Image (cartoon, rainbow, N blue to C red; front, side):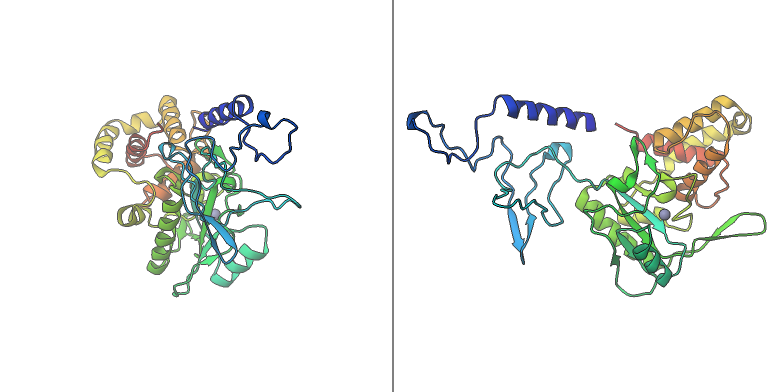
Length: 341
Ligand SMILES: [Zn+2]
């Protein structure tokens, strides 16, 4: 997709360099008036519609989509239009809108703060980490915005999903106030629940964001999904299935497909578990789904943590990081439903 856009962009650029008529405003004086090119300023050079702009108290906003809908590129600006103001010159926004553009915001990443309300605010506003939004746990109807959606916030860190890396560049981050986990005597992580009020806030906020930026279900992810060896949040208590069922947000598997894969997987799972070919197959499936994982052919620490991150999200009843028949069935069902086109 990026390559295609690049090629379109490049060819458009070459075309405009070589064969486009002069489209500058014809303001110069020529000694030979007959030779003057016809003024064609204030028209567009293609079929692209002129963007309509509204002005609200001195801040301008696009109100029409000027991109190519066939590419799912929606460029209605939900922030103000930021333009240069070069001294002595006028920047004109409406002459030549390019259709080759889209939103930078292509992912929605959910987190928990592992801190109480007041501490969450201090850390996310005064230290080296931040998020676009913070969903508190105080029972009111407020959601705090800490960073402009058009700017990067520092919430994802070293991260990857499918072919994308460093997701701070392309994502909106939501932090949810939650105390995270404590560890029991056996070393198992015990996670704190989210209140129903918080879940409703997160769902409403997420719905608004994915709708405005047309973020696909495959790009609504946990921090643990994009950094599985480092992160657990928002953890297994976060109700991803509820978000999918009740708000149509994010990915979930179809039960029937899972059951079909489960019956097949159960048959010889114990034998296959120790087979390096199977381990390679599992790692390949995790990689295909989106996780950044090496195909080592071993149940190594990174693979265990990646399986654990997958279980937090899609099989939260048991998140021991061990691939079992049910987890394997869910992974296959998801890959079948959300395969990369
Ligand atoms: Zn996080």
